[in-house]
Length: 168
Image (cartoon, rainbow, N blue to C red; front, side, top):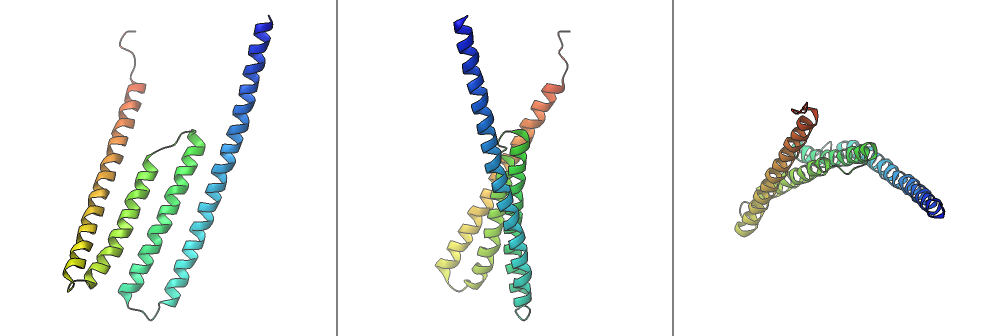
């Protein structure tokens, strides 16, 4: 009987600790979500301000700067989605982070490509920039394949869960 009371008390302490840690985890996730949201708003405002400042600049420069900033906003929003998914499902989902990786690579490809165009007459520097674009492109492909495999795996798991037992 004494053993049973000790076990119940220990289980109650574990449940209490679990609740406290869950609340702390939620508070951290919410803090991250708020900061990501605020960062997204600030980045959008900065992009509007940048467009107004660059009115007299060449259109190509304006579009490059705008695309660079907006891809960063997409990264923030995708990270916000990852946090929201983690809060809802209580597990870390890999796909949003893979998408962030793809967006970051695309952002760098755009920037390096524009810089590479300016390096056409500088052989080794141009070659280095082209190799960098190639590596980033390969990384986009690898991350896209990883997302595809994750989705296939999820679809297979959902199919197995929905499939009725043959034994009945």
